[in-house]
Structures are given as C-alpha cells and as structure tokens.
Image 1 (cartoon, one colour):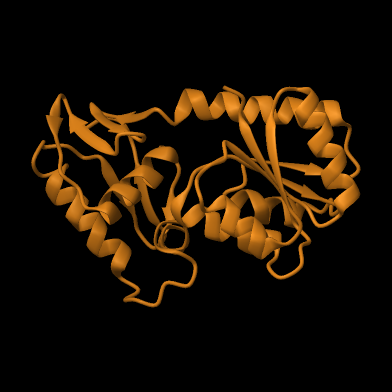
Image 2 (image 1 turned 120 degrees about the vertical axis):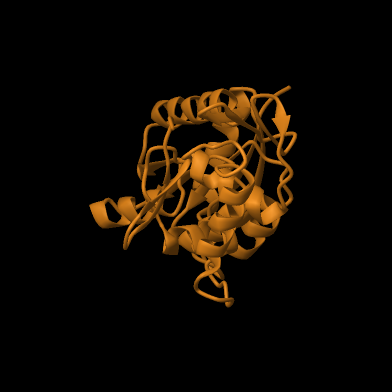
Length: 224
C-alpha cells in the first residue's frame, strides 16, 4: 500500500509540482492551500506524512504543527523560504521531523520523505525503557508482561516522555505537546500526572523510571 502524504502549501504551482513528483514515486497525495483546511485534513489521521509550509494563510504553519502534535506523532516536514537558524530550531522544537528550505531539489525532498517514513516504521511500533513496553498502535503498556492500566492523558504523557527518552523535557513543553498549547487548567497538571504515573509504574514495580530535573522538568532513563 502506498504511503499517503498531505501537502499543505499555499503556492499552487509548488504544490502541483510536488504532487506530480510524489505521484511518479507511487505516493498518494492530497493538497490544501491554507493552514485551517490543512489542519482539518491532518486531524483525520489518514496520512502517513505531512509536508507543511511555514507561511500559510488563515493559520500559520507553526500553529498547524503545534495543533497536530496535540494528538498525533505523524512525521511533519516543514517547507519554507526562510533559512534562519531560529526558524529551524522553532520548527524542530515544536515537533517537526525535518526542515527543508525552498527552493529545493526534488531528489533531496524525496530522500527526506523516505527517511522520515522509515523512521516512523522503526520507532513508532513499540517504545521501551527498563522493561516497560508501550505499544503505540494498540495503546497498551506492560511491565515484564504485566499490563498497566492508564488513562488517555497518562498514556499520552508517558508516550511523549518515552519518545524523548534520555532528553529532559520542560513542563512547558509537556503542557504544549500533551495537553495542547492553549491549555487553561492548573499549571501543576504535569506534576500531578507524573505522580499518577509513578504511582502505577515506579512504586508498583520498584523502579526509578521518571526522573525529576529540579527547576526544569522530567526525563525517562533506563535503569533503576
């Protein structure tokens, strides 16, 4: 089955060019010419990868990316005429899988798409740390074969921490990527849900999985 790619690009000539080239490579494509329409399509969950322009009408590419990351880990490659380090860092920190600057060679774009899709197949099936296994597609968590029952929010938080295993994630980044950038609840929500996870994992299995980095946030590490 061919991979399905969503192209969110307001320059119709570029979108059509990319559509034709991806079609030649066997990909199935859908186009959107503004951020709001693109987001609505992305949120259907029907696509294996998103090509996302930064400068879009109605909703910026960065905003589309942030909203996609509330509920999905689909690979997103940013397309932009901007080439500043700040823009690239901003996109990658917001959850972009890769970044390519216009004008680009189609061969480079195709190579980046293949890499992103391969990485998804390799990494998204099962995430693990210290005997804990999180199956993304089945939304199950087990420890040495023992099932662990988690709420949706607990699962999403654990999933995000495991995806970034070894990296210290700030409370602000967790709120933005797990709860959503416009979260209006209590600011200690992350701490509360980390306690819930520790109660169901660390305390039950005598394990030190989720580590606190004082004044910054949390990190998952392998080992006791």
